[in-house]
Image (tube, rainbow over the protein chains, first blue to last red):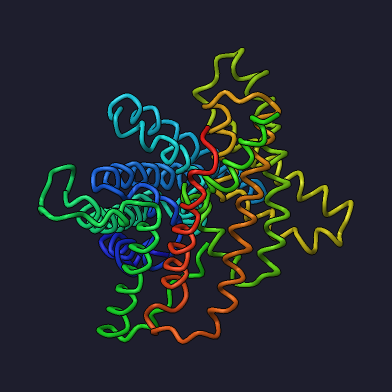
Length: 209
Length: 193
């Protein structure tokens, strides 16, 4: 089905046209939860990228052996297995970060974006395109998290990656829970505005589940 | 007993999953367009929450700890939730088609909700007793229901408001959620655990 699309296009599709957070609006929880600092956002993005790619590849490999009626639970188990892998790896190598966001790493398993890519793409495509689809989606996700956390950390703490950058009284509200919602809302609005203004798009974001 | 009440209040108001732990947002934004769906989701969600908290507690204590399988908790808990939701779906369809017709669609959505998985994980991590787990599950369910209902009532009014085109839909909902979250911060001094 996707054979005439180059792999580059599949990857690009995940980053821009179907960006998981700003365009499709799936898996919003981590977008707010772990973006109070660039480092956390980045590591979370890497974790999701890893799970997305591995889950896509695994689902694609076993897609012919899974009966359609039990496919969703089977995909859940595949995803949960890879999440356990990244969870244990993070717990071993990034202890300080893991303390803050261990719960959210474990909850990657319930992210709608991973399941929906497995269901919509990997279950219908060969291994290589599935790999690139996962890569694109994962990078798109990573990109969105880094953008959001960039603004939140810069405004909320006046620093980036833990390094102080600007010397001013930070806006405490940006690193509070509330700030996450504001930042995501404003950035989404900005993306829509760019889309409407420069690309003549509809500007409608996804249904939000 | 006080401890249980505190746990309940903490889970529903102070550490409200939507507003302070930012979980379950996908469903939160998905079903709050209409009051009716928000209420249906709240009922289904609270019921599933309490039962799956109980089930996972039993399995965690009786099977996983004795066999040293705690590192598999993510896989097993998601299995329990998915299995239970699937079973509830089938049983409800057979026993009361009327109820199924009303609430069945929400059941399918619940599996992709992070809160439903977060509660068993937190229960396991904090080492709550059975009753405490139930109370925590119930509190989380009610807290989520509260969030859904508040949000649905605001969004129904938002339909009538004039919003800049690029902010229509999700962006404005996010900003409204941010404001509610700000209000919920006020609960933070209510009980010190």
